[in-house]
Amino acid sequence: MKYLLLFSALWFSFGGNAQAWTKEYDNVDECTCGLALVTKGDKHGFVTKEGKLVIPLIYEDALHFTEGMAAVKKDGKWGYLDSTGKEVAAMQYHDANSFADGLAVVGKNDKYGFIDYSGKVVIPLSYDNASSFAEGLAAVNKNGLWGFIDRTGKEVIGCKYGYAVSFSDGIAKVMKDSKWMAIDKNGKKVEE
Image 1 (cartoon, rainbow, N blue to C red):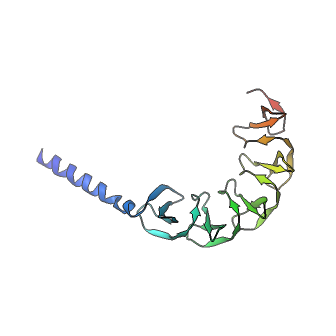
Image 2: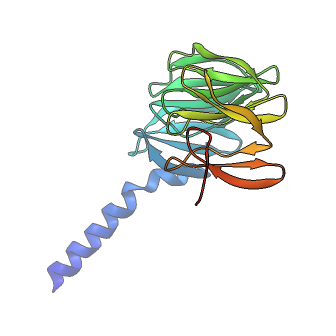
Image 3: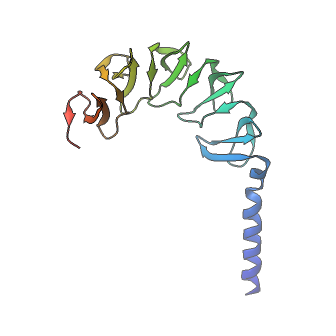
């Protein structure tokens, strides 16, 4: 019995110390792509699951790593880092989303477009708004109306909706004439 108590005490002692580093931060998010977003005061950085600081707490805001990249904000502008902390897209955007399907939505001068992993603009910043890619399509807003583009930037479902939500299981919710409906990837209305 005493060995069981000793083993239990050691187990809890080591278990408690394994996460002691988390007390150094005001907030520690879930580890994604091998790194966890941490916050102390009003600064953000990234640590390994063991608590080793990899990307210093110098950012005003940050998003989780997805697809090996994270959007970070410094001096009021967003850019992107890889998992080593190397800047791959300069801090030049007023808005940024996480990568999805190999592309990320960025906003500059009140227009939105998409960049690739190297930070190169691959779909021009010509939209009034945009959402991340899901199932190969992204909802985009042009002249106040929403539609969908593919990864090449080709409009596959025309901008004719008051609002559009990303595709999930082959279906997207769109609003037309103040009514919600579901469409497929060909833009055809479907029953839910």
